[in-house]
Image 1 (cartoon, rainbow, N blue to C red):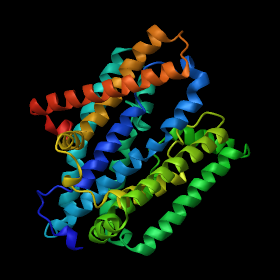
Image 2 (tube, one colour):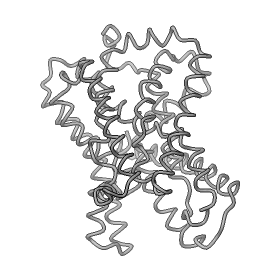
Image 3 (cartoon, rainbow, N blue to C red):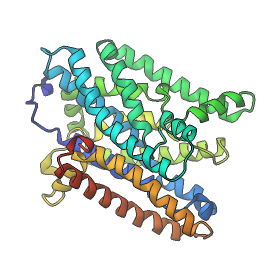
Image 4 (cartoon, helix red, strand yellow):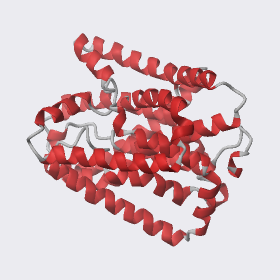
Length: 359
């Protein structure tokens, strides 16, 4: 627990790095502004190629509770109910703002009220909105269970439970005997809390063992870390390819129901925990801080804009056909464009005294 004795104003650099990498990864999944029908032949190859970036949402959830546990530890004199209220209020502001914006947009463009209500409930009112719903659910659970969840026996038990649950999902996908249950899981989509429980516990345990984690990370050679990360990428590719075959190409909403997603969190924390500012050239550090600082704004804005751009792309390019290299180029250019415009708008909103919407 020694590493927890830092000032509240001190940043943890490796967390900024992980947040920066994760938000870049998130944007990559929203950066194709044409319908899938225009690149059907390239869909599998493209999805498999970018599957190693699936760590992004698990890492974001883990970091949320990693930092929250640090905050609770440093403010032991505060009542947990007070901290919960403040955290919920802080989360409610951007959630209500971005949800309200998209409700207005969808109403204006002719979406039926029932469709809008469903999109809100399943976190599809804008792309990635389910993440905010997940955090809301886990926040209540965190304050009720944080001391209990910090036990290593609980972490081990929950890992086993999460693996068994993912195994059950894979079994259901491989058989037609439980098709009705799968239909309901597809209707509920991603906010189902049982998919994400392990990442809250990871956040608590990693936070409470930060000093030991950093010390262990320092003992691992850089070459070994690179080999581990390459192996992790290979695991993502192999498991996503398997999941694609199980679902006959209809992976969503099960793209995070992967064992490699669970493994990626401790692996990435272990590999990055010893990183410090001196390991990066000064020209890169400002970008890391910016992406980390505005990760919430980028997450929400890119989700909103991607739907808008996809709507235009579907209308004007829906009859096109793109080769693999063409759609890859579209994705890479769209990735850069969406990231930059989302970051720019986040900074603009913050300067308009609306920092709570983006930070």
